[in-house]
Image 1 (cartoon, rainbow, N blue to C red):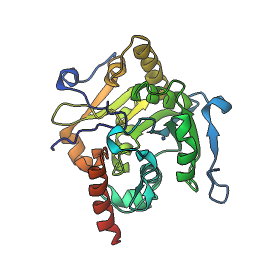
Image 2: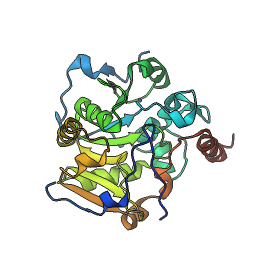
Image 3: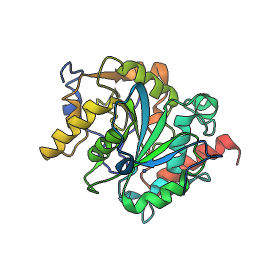
Image 4: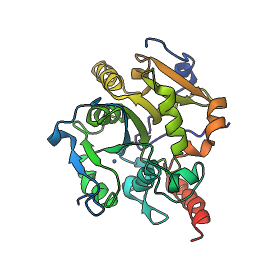
Length: 280
């Protein structure tokens, strides 16, 4: 499988082979309601502690980046074939998106692969993202950046702290083709470990489409941030993690699951792909 670079809104989610060569370690983004069937909360207000739902999984969408390569608009809420991009990511996790492959059947008509959702974002993004998430069928919590612009590691840490599940499925807001079947597979692989992270043939970890145990990952991120580290890969090396390699990924999904939208050109290509399925 040819790798698709996974540079997210923060432009810091892919790492050189020098990191990936370590392999497996053994120690190592209005009221959200649909007839009032979903809840909205703020992690700072409700005092959520991660891990209180043993075995459960919370989806964490990272949306706090500045989208500098996208232009003067927040790409998290940029319409993508008529739906805000962050909502497309959320819908795929909930099984309510359009039937776009990979995993189109499950993304459009399957059971949710997460129990609830945490959106990590900046304070100035909150109103726009809240509007984009109106009517989402699962509970939504917002984990606003305590210190904006510290990169995706801080976003993952804040998302893990706000999660209600023992596990978190972290996905960047600019990955509108995330395959829910892969997320379910990563959760299964993470059982008994502290992280399950895809790694393609180029040896780069796909850390923003991965599953982590929330508490250990949050603690590892805290330590890495305190040490001045910025790359998301660093906390991984403190965890007992399993690598989901290219051959295994190919048995579950296609490389499009990792495709992200960094530029206007990427956005136009993604719209063509979605509109071709929808027949718009």
